[in-house]
Length: 119
Image 1 (cartoon, rainbow, N blue to C red):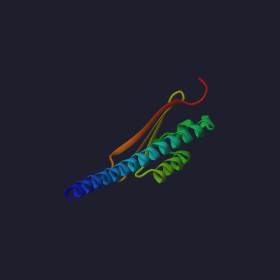
Image 2 (cartoon, rainbow, N blue to C red; image 1 turned 120 degrees about the horizontal axis):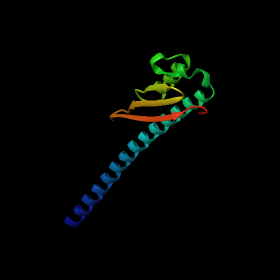
Image 3 (cartoon, helix red, strand yellow; image 1 turned 90 degrees about the horizontal axis):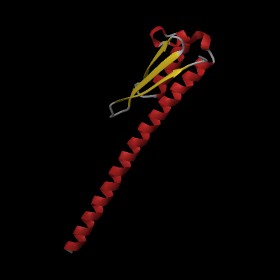
Image 4 (cartoon, rainbow, N blue to C red; image 1 turned 180 degrees about the vertical axis):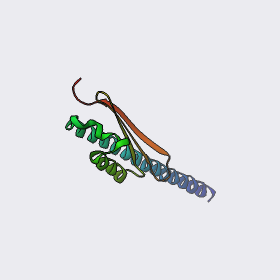
């Protein structure tokens, strides 16, 4: 009888371990999804900039034009508490930083720096 209770206790601990592992995997998958989305959004903006190289200055979030505003709205819609900063410096250097805060997590960010256009 005592052996059966010990076996039941060990089995219950194993089940709790599997449930905890499942929760950790779900959190990791969610974080990975947000990172992939942030990367996609940054690359999407860089692609738009390549097609509009004559107006790169309008993509600065400090003086956010219509192009920049539409993109920052997408960041806010697709990432929890999503915010973005775009800095375009001479001649064609672009720095993009995207920040978000997942529920129950700290603030995460994705940053990329690139040169848009021919040297």
